[in-house]
Length: 380
Ligand SMILES: *Cc1c(COP(=O)(O)O)cnc(C)c1O
Image 1 (cartoon, protein in one colour):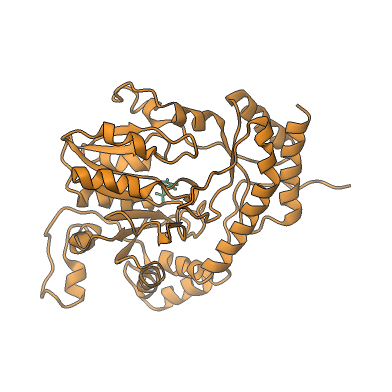
Image 2 (image 1 turned 120 degrees about the vertical axis):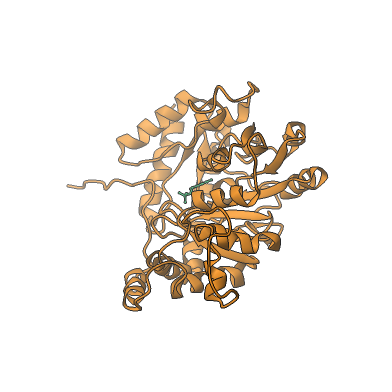
């Protein structure tokens, strides 16, 4: 008797050293923030990706909230955000009283339609927040050009974009600020966790202060000031060194993790591109973008088709998932939105489905997923 095992959407990958490093952190006697492992992680990111300065945070959400504080947003300031994203992207700015102006996605992929941004700029606009969906770069030259013309900041939501590139430059190094996530569903994980990359040196010192409850504690520990106190607004955005210890074990295996994820992604891509004859889309990578193996998705031709496909796969113990719901139609924002239609955001809301993709997905299991999808379309 064979019972087919369920194929989950995601399974957190452990390199094996996580608990060793956590034990080391615990034994060191210093487990609050900015300990030995936090410093190792910071050094890794700065050296590997050339970010000017990075600060680990407790989540990408927190990194985005730090960015919103750093930009000194005032109530009524406007921030341009794609509608097809996670709630944290706009919510960080809403917490500062900003008005969110939602932009549509492109027809090519769920990233923000750079060509639509300029028409959304008003005298109150302060920032653009591109989200590199599935780790695939947004059209950053076009976005930067609008930002430069109107004096706007660019904050990259690079939550899914570790080790991915735009014209050879690492994502997260292009905006003044960028936010990464190490949530267990991302490529590199620490359970919950995140990081702010600070590419504009103007924000470097204040970022440390905001992360340390509004105090100049970091300067104090470097001996730059002889006492520390309350110098700005802030919060507690820094993770325990236990989290950093876990993360460091992952970082040591970054290349191995990325190679494996990209290989799995390529197998899906090769096997499923032929579904275009049924109108089904696979991820589209513009020439300027790389793939980091974060996510493999299909776009179905309708909501009904997607529902039927998910149902068909679930019957075979395969657990794909859809993704975001257009935020301009969310219960929280629908009344605040200016009423513009954002048809591509709605298209991805209805039609996008993400396939199981995790380090330990074996070739046999992946073939089961592919076979079930092909079977669904061939027998329709
Ligand atoms: C995962 C994710 C976030 C949130 O990350 P957390 O670390 O869970 O706060 C924000 N934006 C995008 C695009 C994400 O994928």
